[in-house]
Image 1 (cartoon, rainbow, N blue to C red):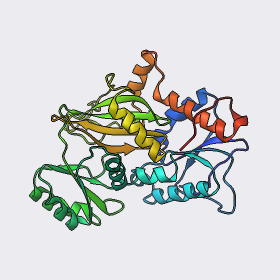
Image 2: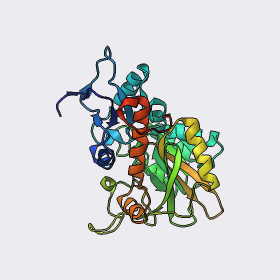
Image 3: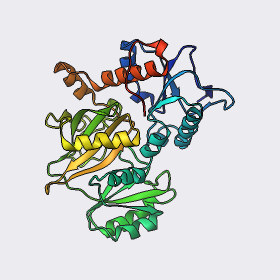
Image 4: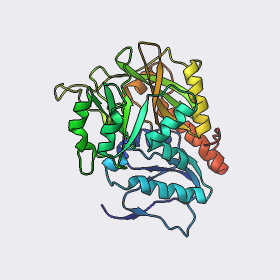
Length: 340
């Protein structure tokens, strides 16, 4: 990969900061339909001039916690550098520096959830593979592991006994098959859903858009809804379909949990997010993940259009256009609410 300077244009535009082109096309297509000028900033092998000012426009962070698995192990730090540069210049950023830190730390997410009164899974953090084994002794099996900087199911494994984890512990250490990028692994209570699905509530501009049911009957922890994430079901043939996604019509803006989540996102300054929760047989609603690099399932989006509703990607494009209008009023007739 050759080095490049981050591209700019002479007029105010939306600059999309990301690490994975496979996740961007639905959003750029939606911006194109609105006639919104946009520029992609793909971070690996690029550079910034700290003596120069960032270009005029709006900046949208689409950086993900799993970036290090695709291109360069240091992408997270590249993102921090770019977001710090933008913040120092006073540029408007959707899901900026503080939100990015939440994206890449499940410890921060757990603190934010419990601090706002949500029922979150009991969790312990371990700094090293032996510490992971010791931390697990306080948990009754089954329990799960996951990476602190996760995404796409990184490090998520179910263990049905302490002996099973003991035998696999080296996988989580330096050079191991499950080594976390920041060295931090989590032990978490296994939350048994009442039915084999989790729910992902999507928010745009900090407001509820829709909730999606994600089938986990195959035991998969890979819950990314994007086309590029689709993988065969565990134990199925090579032609098997990925776990299905479908809208949950009964989850609405008036659902108490949804209102509570909107308050959370507003307090944390998160404009665009997908929040995952599990409903248990004993009536708990356990919130366990805040995904600020949220994607959308094409089947669900197509069903939205057939039902005469606006798909999430179009709603996001309109929101982003409104933010650009506020950042540079002369570039667009659209207006939207303030970015956080």
